[in-house]
Length: 140
Figure (tube, rainbow, N blue to C red):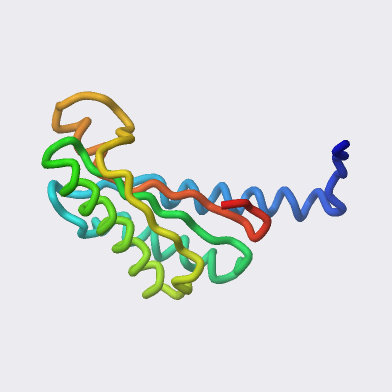
């Protein structure tokens, strides 16, 4: 039998949830990459810096960075490129003060597109990283 116990401090819980939502919103927008590139775009660099600032104040939070690619190229190349994108995000977060043990990376290559299709806009959207925010209590 499981029981559900309300949190002791609902305001603290709301604050924590807002922080997670802020980080998620920062890191899952403007997160696209140029064709066949793992270079971070300047706008996303600003988001990484801002998220790192928040993360430094909340050491119980960690991230999973998943690299994605569009369908251009071979599946092997796309898997490698997507991993490079995730690793590049991790590198910059580290530069901005987030310890590397708080950031996991993985690659799904071109297997989980955000949108189906071959137009340039769809391919751009699919060349991205996606970020999950985990708490110390999360099962990863």
